[in-house]
Amino acid sequence: MPLAGLTRRLPEWWYRPSGLALPLWPLLPLSWLFGGIGSLRRLAYRRHVLASYRLPVPVIVVGNLTVGGSGKTPLVLWLVEQLRQAGWRPGIVSRGYGSDRDEVRPVVMTSTAAEVGDEPLLLARRAGVPVFVGRDRVAAGQALLAAHPHCDLLLSDDGLQHYRLQRDAEVVLFDSRGVGNGRLLPAGPLREPLRRLATVSAVVWNGASDSRLVRAVSALPQFSMTLTGRRFVAVTRRGVSCDAEALRGHRLYAVAGIGDPVRFFRQLAAMGLTFAAHPFPDHHRYQTTDLDFARDGVLLMTEKDAVKCESIVTGEAWALPVDAEIAAAGRSDLIKTLLESLHGRPSA
Image 1 (tube, helix red, strand yellow):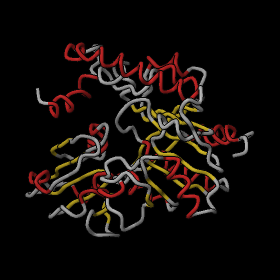
Image 2 (spheres, helix red, strand yellow):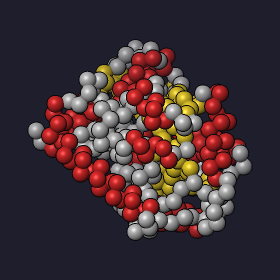
Image 3 (cartoon, helix red, strand yellow):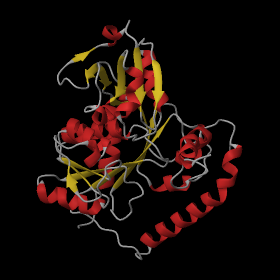
């Protein structure tokens, strides 16, 4: 099987309910090697063989233990708003995954997803706070603070494994897929072993919790999150929106290039829409020909896909913005948990 085809099949095999799928067995030695290298890297940071740096403001990391998206962008947006209400002036740093450049740069309204990545562009458009991207998150944070000295807290989007940047609190997000077969890459979806959870500040469940994780997270503060979207916005016409009722009766094609496309398709179905589903890999770089199937109908897509498709869609296309909602009982507790992690922070 070609490498591209194997890469597309891996998530399907990782999340099979029957345990380790047969095609993954040959990958186990690579998983052991990946785990060993990761352990040595973490040890090197703990022993100061590799240098890490503390920024002059607190840093909260929002990340995954698994590869692929699980709802981090909506959670970061929610945290930004809650922290602002609590009197903080946050900024956001991100790797800029999916961009064609590695150097540190700000994300502005005229940026493109190819320049800065799809998720940072979406964050910059919706958060209303400074966003900087770069492979080196320390340098990105330093540049953001130099350009925006009023910022007194940084959120690092998807920086859990970026140990070069010291952090004061960590939030790990899981979606309803959980940890799949529980194996490390490439035989499973884990970036780090489950014991890594012992050091995080909080776990957020986007959907049902994984019963196999109960022991690993039993001592941690845990919070439930849902993603809600009610109105669609036109991809190429700013300020134009509609509800699901306006789309019924049309030939609909749904596109999702996120970590779990089924989550988006399930959400559309719950809104009473009938459509043909077209999943793509996470962070897929769309070409005009990718959307040829929708020439005779209406395209529906995630907001993350829309920022990459604005310049290539030729027909009617709508995106569904979503917002994170933390269960009412835990809203204030999550912010309280994170802020308590910042207390007693040593001087930079």
